[in-house]
Length: 433
Image (tube, rainbow, N blue to C red):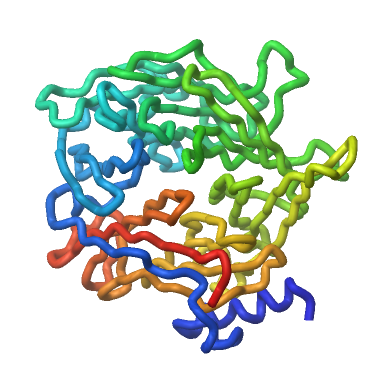
């Protein structure tokens, strides 16, 4: 049986049991819960879509509760403090296809990591139906004053344009916020701005691709930001320009002054990368990424890049492995496939987190896409969790979600009484025991 076939066969057990039955129920768990901390029942803790943003040694937890933005500082041990709230001064634009362009959350530093929240969104320019302004609202932790506005740039997107992408991220030290935007399917630059203390713009307006050189422009999809490393980065996927070329994942490091630093590319040996569900993280010596593909032969894929050894010769090449680990057909088709939450290294193997309707599931694979150990299911009273937010660190994956009684998981439904938010750390030993 080939490695790919073994991965598929064992994956069926994920759908029918709380263990990898086909892979040996006596195997150890592929990952473990390091700690599970309830965050209390404050309005912020009970905000359904609250997200984790790394800020120095801890985090900021932020979310939109109706028309109120709620946020506060969260330690890595689960202490939630200095909760703040303010009314969102304006509503983000909604595209023709129903896509809301914000709000998105990042942080900057005034006197301490993450003591300012940056809320990014796009709004229609006055009198226009196809031109957006990108806004950033900046609020001080604990302040009773309204947030201040910084206009970052504009984006043209007619109804016939591709999908508008707007993202926000932060440097891991919590000092800088990054806002990125562009339109898929256009031969035009991706734009970005870096913000520092008090929302001050850092450096010149940034671009991925040079519109002064038309030959440098490329189509792209799966735009993302990542802060799971010592640096902040913009990532994307370029489709092949010719039939004999590969899809290319590209990573652009963004320095604290807003300039582009190092770059990394991974050629993806797959037929298609066609959706924005992509997660990535650096490893000790390379990069890991996973994505989900909505093609007819779609599913969940991963790629692993490791650099060549020091004695590899004068023209060494990176070692890249690409495999499919789960087929969407096992879930009844792509629309029912659980959304990727993260990918994280586990020694020479890796784990992925899947946000399933009954709760979070953590699966472990080796670099040949073979399952390793039993699946871990994160704690949930009734198997009804809200949106999942995760940050991949060097020691653990930090995960937060709202655990809700009952069966309702509609995004616009009221948070039911008896709900609780948790901060969970997921650890994956280098070797299974």
